[in-house]
Length: 260
Image 1 (cartoon, helix red, strand yellow):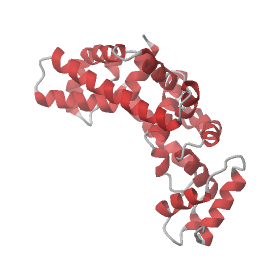
Image 2 (cartoon, helix red, strand yellow):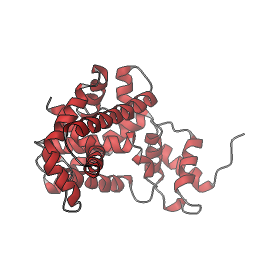
Image 3 (tube, one colour):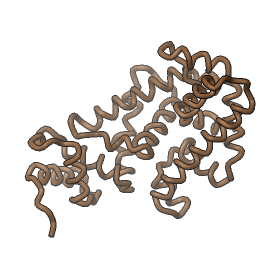
Image 4 (tube, one colour):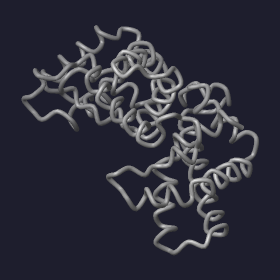
């Protein structure tokens, strides 16, 4: 027997169905999603259409992900227009957004308060600011390591070990098998989301998601091992290097994979 849902949640679901008639989202999944994010009595202030597609994307629906690319990620150039970004920066931002939203699951944080477009604009500007702090020219990987005025410790690590970091990343990539390197190139260079990559490999979305996480972890572990062997750093410096590796991995991969 199907449970009874609050009228406000039913209205939000119907609003979402009208907004996205080609996306078939299970009602129970939607109502669970709403119940976790919208306090009782606040449904009237929530945007049902936006919450509907966000929920569908969080569940891995292929049509929803494609629609998000067309209707939302297509707005990234407009979000950044005031700063006159390069085409490469725009594409780097799009790739990182796909990873943060659909691999790391940040899309599930959208609560329906305010438009999804406005929420995505904030996320986009934060990602862009991080990229620019790390590498304003996007030319040299060692220039892209995090090290802002907000974190002088990492600034020292950047200046001291930038080239060793780049070498360790390239060696870690070389240690992967050809299929794992292809997986990374499809995601970071070609901009495919994990659903499309799943089609390429002929496996499920969940399998690709788990594999992506595992490959990234292998890269982090291998880089840490190589850096520990290559430099005479203290334990404190190695701990800071590991923080750099983890925080900067996505952008570092996008740079190195473009420059084999």
